[in-house]
Image (tube, rainbow, N blue to C red; front, side, top):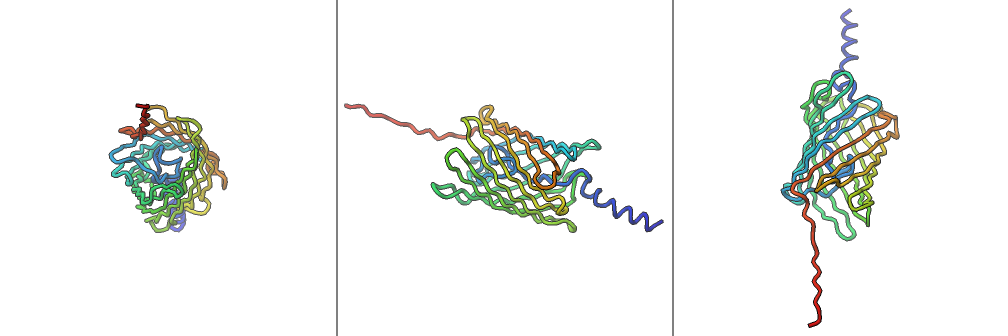
Length: 263
């Protein structure tokens, strides 16, 4: 009987520790318009600017809904800090997920031919309920590359995360995000999202994501997207919505042209 109880506990531990409904950790993600969906831009908020806003995700297979509050602040024109606080809702229960935070440091500005390049440092802190937490404090580091060519803006990310809890694998995130300026206040978005999961190779993901972003007000951005899993259909699709507010509004450079008449 004792052996049977022990065996049952061993089988239950993974679902208790990692949350049966949670097979991914949101971690630290970009806030619009300085990124696509999960792909960061090497560009950042100007010094003294604050970006804040809610985001919402719906994952089809797991019937998981995730509400998040995101915020970022420009310490300098090339240094940005941010935080992400996710809240998970399922049919069974709901609660806070692990908190994500990060620092972006751009050390190469975009030139005529060369891209802008930034380093990203992230951490995930187990601040959520036991059901939605891996109980692991993680640290990550990555490289962000961005380049604008005409109406297209391309972004490439490679981020490695060292997972603090034994028994879990380190994560590798690789993403490519493209923004197309279709109109003055409209951007079309595309992203290829790949992730080597901390749990098992069965949870590795490769998603194609598409959507658009609208400048709906003075520095107010609304982003809508839909993702499709290309690997194991888990989730089969992901619906995404976010709204971000930037204050004070970004300063636009104004070029004044003065014509001299004949005297």
